[in-house]
Image 1 (cartoon, rainbow, N blue to C red):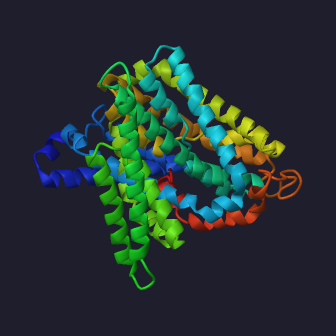
Image 2 (image 1 turned 45 degrees about the vertical axis):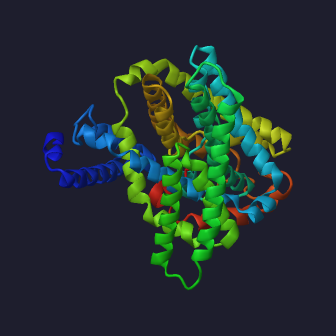
Image 3 (image 1 turned 60 degrees about the vertical axis):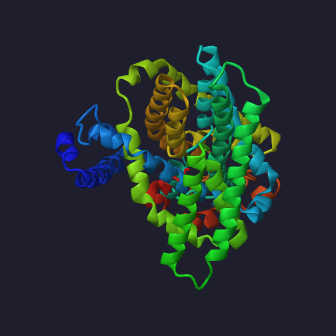
Length: 442
């Protein structure tokens, strides 16, 4: 099949994309029966049609599809920006941010320290730790919808999983700048750190400016089709400029989304993008599965298992510490960490970027660890999320829903958002079930 497609030229590329989309769709029919997230099906589909199994897509095509990763991450990062609306952040109070920082960064710090202890390089450990901060919201959100869970505990989960990916994007960008600065020599000078940081700040400025300009270009009289075209031009333009300057487009695209939502207050564009991007995101995850090196699984075995366990420990410990600092309810302290286990989406994209930054062998190991552990996380994550919302009393029919059993999820203004926040969040994400928010992941 791969040989046949490789002899067709441009037609072969088109057919290869069709094979990727079809295989991703077909595998979700199976994962749906097993109550697993769609992302899991996409990755498994990529493994099956990839070079280590059926070899349906020529390897040269796989190597030429890096642009799919860049595009997918650009759209994901832009979508994350909508959660940084200043009015929402003020309404939820600082406690929500503190809780998210604790659970996210604690996991990253745990992973980095443990990887250094077992003898891995500082560059590898930093990037893996930064990636470990992220959480995949799709599995948790689908579980919440399935059991019709509600209440302050659920409100807190919905807000945290959105902010989680933003923390991971920022942490990864900072760590990537350090790694790139130190890769040319054994020591790092001030200028080697300053220039990458400066370029990232310029990228942030570019993203913010593009978001403001986009908000001016998209107005009530602008048709939906033209609004979508302008959004694509903005996102792709920012991503292309950043990539050409060897700067991660993640922060710039997230800044663009943040600037747009604050300048316009219009969330309809994000809904349009959610409906537009699923095919692109399916290709991205299938491509990630195709790039999974089966022989590397053996080498990643012990390290992958350690990463899998340490990240869970970090998430649980961090959420408990954050809950203690913010004086959150007992339910948050005990069960919140269980809802933060799934990992896919942004983490897979960051692994691909990390693979480009690190030496070939280390990069392959990083990608293999994230992809293989991501499959495990997506398998056990929904069960853990189910346990957390049931144990917290957030499922209708369980004692204490909406009453004292849950109490204030996070003290201060965050809890004041109450069930209405869950409704608002649900209204903002009408396509989560259909596309895995293809992961807002983001």
